[in-house]
Length: 142
Image 1 (tube, helix red, strand yellow):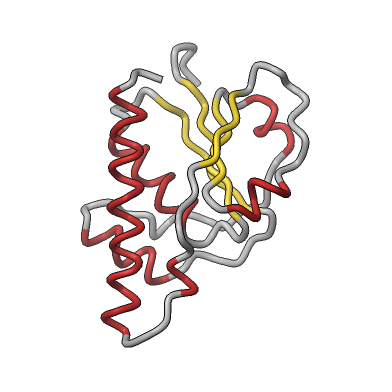
Image 2 (spheres, rainbow, N blue to C red):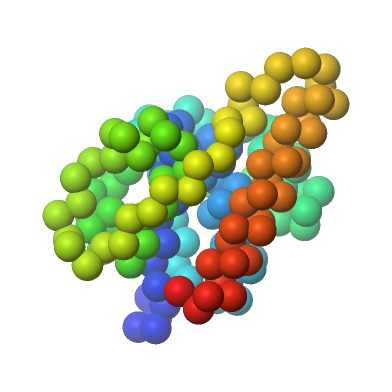
């Protein structure tokens, strides 16, 4: 890892949708300024709808794996960003006091109901909201 890269660790409950989308977006939008990792309190597998909406946005996350939080990465991170309330409330204790922990809450698109198109629209809305937040994070030079 290059010395100047900041490590960003995105966390959610199952590491299947939100954290995966955020991971892919920051890797693309961050212009190689970040080492990006994602994980969950549990590993639920990669959600195919998340893969699809990211592909529509030109971001390929199809090779991502669903991982459980690694305490070593957690304590080495510059930023730990939780993306759901459950992960924010149940995040393991971070012993490294220099880690910046933020909560960016986004609705879980995997819980969307309705027609397939309505569900996909929820995935797209979360993706687009995350993209805006990540663009802001990168613009602020974090």
